[in-house]
Image 1 (spheres, rainbow, N blue to C red):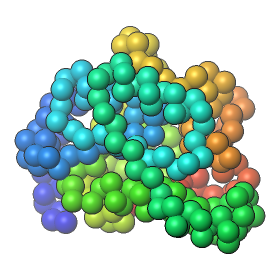
Image 2: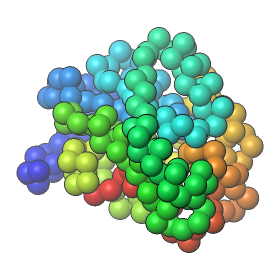
Image 3: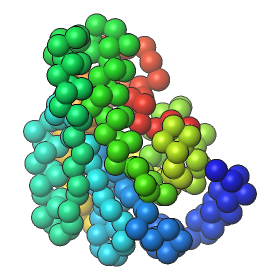
Length: 233
């Protein structure tokens, strides 16, 4: 990807509101702008912005087959409230069968390699299919979520997925996000009120203790960067 193009887009979006920036990206790349939602609080904010302003962005989510019930319920409530269709991508059934038969249903606890293989089958591969043929991928990443994300830019090239990524909430604080959710009565996962900050698959997510890193509840049995491979550069 041309670095000058990325720098030019970065300068443009920095001067615009989120609505203006997404609108301009949609004008530049009609039909090629997608937003991936995990139904987390950040993503609920972006879904509300897209829906309220009728922005021509295709919204999708990944169903790993091991999500919390509360996440599925929130998906249904979100589609009903905002009158939007969130397309769901599933892992390939034959890949899941092979994975489970090879390492067991909860084999991700046994080694980092097993966990990464599980993430790849259930999340990374479906994401690649969802992003295929598109130019702009909108995400709900915030820089304070983890050290890995603190150096990200609002517009950047994602080498692993071969796509331009737009991170509109990158400089939002947790307080900014929670206030926006409250002011706009945005539905959110009730697990957030029980200490779950970052919510993924049920077997791989726990509530965090006061003072713990926001990503500490993900793959808590590992000493890792707390990433599943979706967001690579």
